[in-house]
Image 1 (cartoon, rainbow, N blue to C red):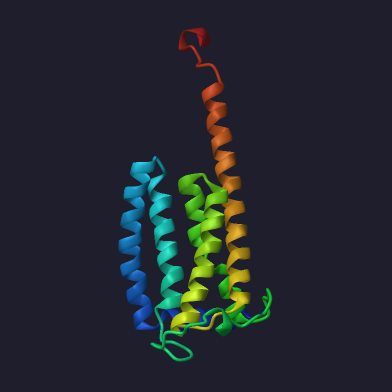
Image 2: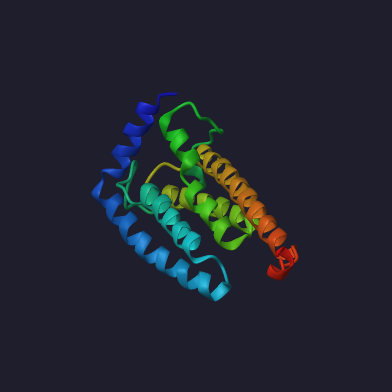
Length: 186
């Protein structure tokens, strides 16, 4: 595994003006919507906004770049255009796909405290992106991308859930302790 090659691929993808514009506008749009949803649903607003930016990043790098195949051609059999390959971390693109949904999934769990819902949304989002890529030619639909995205999101959900459980447990521990009487310490 070459960290230098991974960084080069990431830089190449993020140097595209359409990706940067999609990321910026997506962060503004998804971040704002996430904050409003957080206030409405009683979620944590800062992690919700960061989850919105993570979603913007995932969509910008996968759909905000020119197509690889027949861009602009609507395909009638998107599943037939998908490459049937398996989970792998042998190349830079595979490793970047592992990380693609990590920010969204991690911060969404911190915001909502709903790890299973976030995992389902992450897998659904990954599948939807692959189908859009197959239908429009804005990328290559690969089973491997779906697997790598979902495995990465699963790890992020697990870490987010562990952090949430630990902080909730610590908070409950502080709330359960009896208040100290300042007069009793004299």
